[in-house]
Length: 273
Image (cartoon, one colour):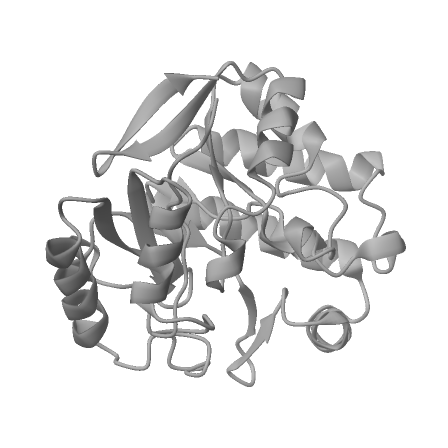
């Protein structure tokens, strides 16, 4: 199977490096049938990271322009990656990726990006959870479940993003029964909403994590639950549009999946691997 689409695509309307049209041209070069844009929805407490236009009008207008311009060559969709703490008007977009990037300190109205860097994650654990990393993990997954139930996204983004800067088990032991119980319980609850879980190659392609998100133990459990998965690159530059898709496909097979959801013809369909 060759994957000829990507639904988690960033461009310079948010924190991506390249223009939307550059991403389209890269997709054409790879023989894609479809490209789904998913800029970060406007996040008022982190404006450099998200859509600069709080309404997203300019972003949607540009994607619409490209959709018409390249209509005879590729199907283009205008999605959005919504953070739990920054909901969007869902009807404005073709699809919704629901993600949790932040944990909030309500006492000071401070937001910690769990995927920002190790220093920010350490500050979150110390400042918000008194140094207790497992309590932080519980909160992250609790919000992840609430995100799935409350917003019912089409796609759940990088489900275990909290592990991004936990290399060499710096903050908590991802192999421990305690951690895996928390993550698996959350997975079971989120899967009940029947979203598509992405196998996200972003951090893996950049050499930050040892595997794509989610980790294999989560994918194996999701497969037993009958959950759906798709492969996305979460790319922030044109050169990484389909990075490590072959690795992710191999991982999906190893975890027991025989079908993938793919963006094709502007819709999410199931295809045999």
